Length: 230
Image (spheres, rainbow, N blue to C red):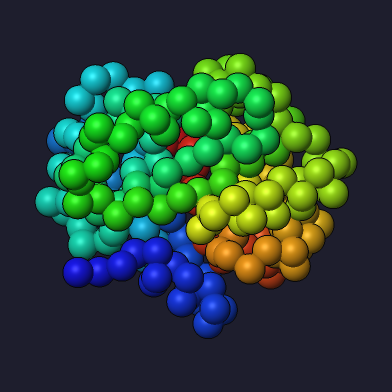
């Protein structure tokens, strides 16, 4: 059986850059899965599925349609526990460490346990850190938390380290869906220097130039979504 986290970790150790395309089930037409997947970059290594709010059973339908059309790993990126489906390969077990709302620090995680304790999903503990991307994003609205300013580099680094120290296996810096600007190169570099686990960057990356800058700064995986929704 594949170990998806081990593959991500090994790629990071070897300097191999990864690219995940994020699919929001509420904005996805299952009947067009084949056409959609033909349009994503050939460098794509993973498919993430999830959204801040998703209609009941829509995640499962989306994952099933994607898996009939590709062998790429499909990893859940859930906005809440209702989006969990065993049809995927793995799950980012997210804790929103940048906020102080207990619902997204631990309560959603507790609610998910009944679905996960007998599941075959690979569970990847992930420190999820919301960074100001210049506009209010869905995560901010739904979670009722504020992103960390990009000026607060030390706070961001310390939050990432707190995630690693508490046993998270991934650090995910998120500027938010449709962000006006992505996580800065300075932040990526400083966090990468501080942590010893893979670093994922998402939000506001729309061009190849932005992608390459993020990789050069230290991102191990980049997540892109809005560009392909449009």
